[in-house]
Image (cartoon, rainbow, N blue to C red):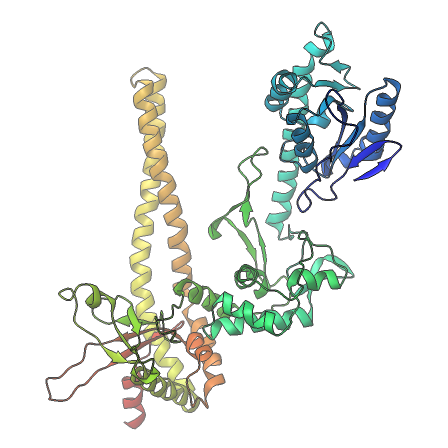
Length: 572
């Protein structure tokens, strides 16, 4: 709070990050002594209209008016860069706290639009709230004075408020149209570059890699692939004194929407999660990730991925696409520790081969890791639904490592044959899946066309009086709901069919990944999550007098590799 010529200024720098301080009660302010609230507001849209609406211009007008009319204790309340459609403004809320405390005699604005651009709420404040607290409201340029009930200008205030609201609506529509056009062209809509990138000095719309921050991003993804949770990653970065994204940008002199934290090295799990979920690290622009319901409701809601606009290859990737997708799967699996504090890199990857349920990781009370085991979660809850598929974690690790080494070794020695066999297998699997999905797609498209015809028919019947309005409304809602569900399913099926047609790319990608692990001697969590999609465990077979148990490994992008078939051909 600063005093200048007996005027108290309350001026938050940024509505999103700074709360306006409350006016402190003066020693002279007591009983009948009240202040005159001089309220100034400027939005980003208003700023484009020129100097006439600037905060300084508003202050000059309000200060002169208060001085000429000898109003008591003029006090500025300022919201700079805040839209008038919302009343959740720091300066406005600070002023209203003073009103509710009975400390305000006058509220003065340059015009009605400075108070806000929501005609309903403006009417509520000027007609009910302000009179309730005996506050006189004056809008100078609109010649509005709540004390003059017979003024024609007061009568026209409602119309002016409606025009002010219309201006906000029209501006919002234009901005949305511009952003929609830019977003659909692949121009990034975010003004804040993700941590790990920086703006190209020669082209502000282009992102280039920031090597120092990018190294931290890569490390975060690597730790997640190794099975670490966001909180564990955050604790590790904090212990190593790595600057948080906000602190790092502040150290470079880059403005951010968040204020600098007290401890520049204190990472939290939410920061890690935001990094792990940013698809932009794969080298693509992602637009329309969030949406708002209206100009009145500014709350941002997440858009489903099918409604987002993704443009790959717009800038250099920091994280490979398959690693990013794998991390999203790992995040969904949520590795949980047992009561003894032991966790397994296999958690979330092991399934019962009979019922398909996840197998639970358990450890003994003595805490010995070599006695930890997996068992079918269905059997654990309901013994009669499924058999026990008990398998030691150490045995599972040996079996998986052996299988993976055989696969990697085969690819190294017989890559061409491996590619041919997998192409044949994937072609058969894909053809069957494509046929099934194509049939469903055809049925959905046929039903959508039929629904359109039915909708036209009931519309004509309603217009001709053969169908009541109530019946028409019921049928139209039903048809519309079904049509939306089918259209969403059509989009999903089209994407799934396209994925099935690109299986050859999966083979090449898997071979490239496998070549990194030709010398695999021990199983680490990163290799496991990069190569394996799921491990299916059979129930043990004791018919021969010995305990025999098999596992089946589903690899990322390829599914089940027919290793026995490959090895038979090799020895033939």
